[in-house]
Length: 121
Image (cartoon, rainbow, N blue to C red; front, top):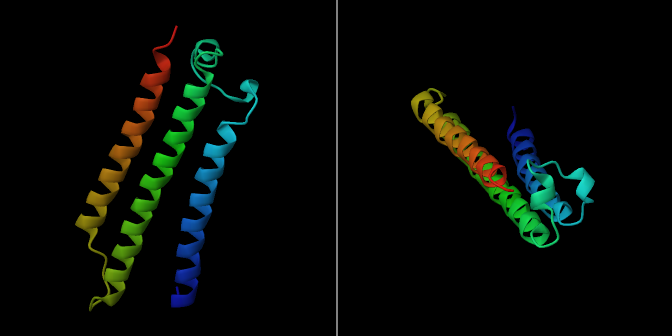
């Protein structure tokens, strides 16, 4: 891929994903309750907990989007280093380690979200 195409793809991914996760975080605060699917929805969306529940979901979206953008920055940096090395080669052990860290954090955040909302009643 050429430099210009790489730049526009990278910038488009970061801008698009940031906008998507930000928009989801904002929309969660405004969505009708029937569109929010949670375990124990009646408990979590009861009037006394609804604002806190929506804030928690919005914060999770923003945090997850941040983690994803950090992982993309790592990938872009690895691609840059690979393209500036001679011969051109990706550092596969470092890339696998970065992927393992991202997947661990992503899975952990999803499990934490499920555990948080699975305990209501």
